[in-house]
Length: 133
Image (cartoon, rainbow, N blue to C red):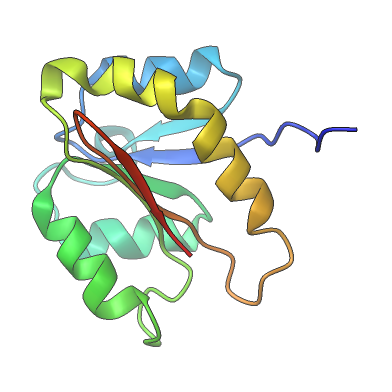
């Protein structure tokens, strides 16, 4: 018996195309766009904090988000529960790559159930998808 398909909650950063959010919505997930929750242009630290406080997976194209999550998220107190889906692909391919990665993203979320600090970190580029556990 396969595990139950999860319902993910995603926080879409302002640089991410709306088509990515639509892919998650079509898959039955909950999507919150940054522009609907906080001011556009908000500092990355605030974006991370809001995403984490709402138990949402942050979806970002911003290279700084990856550095911020790695620097503060892994083994540090700050952003300990921050989940990040980092899109390192061309913006025009982002929605297609998310669709291709959907089962991986859902699997990683299911896999993280029960962990002390539930979080996922997935990076998607034009040729590969990487996850960090």
